[in-house]
Amino acid sequence: MSSLRARRIAILSRRRSLCRISRWMKYRVRYAQAVVKQLEKMSPDVARRIRTKIDRLTNDLAGDVKRLTNYSPEYRLRVGDWRVLFNVAGDMVSIERISHRSDAY
Image 1 (cartoon, rainbow, N blue to C red):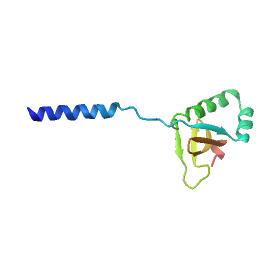
Image 2: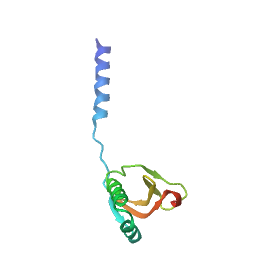
Image 3: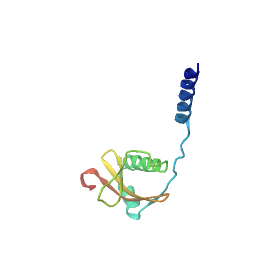
Image 4: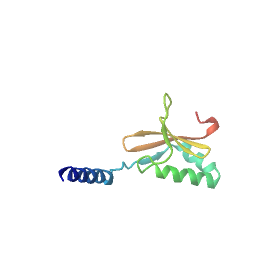
């Protein structure tokens, strides 16, 4: 009986650990002036898609984000054929550049 009880306790403790709510980091976004001008020049549907993905970055860097090696800015967000290059400092995401994938790096 005790081994059955031990297995039940182990299963319940695993379930509890899976159900814990993690604390997500909330970020603030700062756009460089050149990025704002570039978004204004883009077609409205592409600019809207990029802004939507950038807004999702505020929730724990959600999206297709990768850390770049030996490159500045340190991170990139992929939005279709476009790349959003940004840095993270504390709780601030600084959008540095938006480029087409052919000339992003």
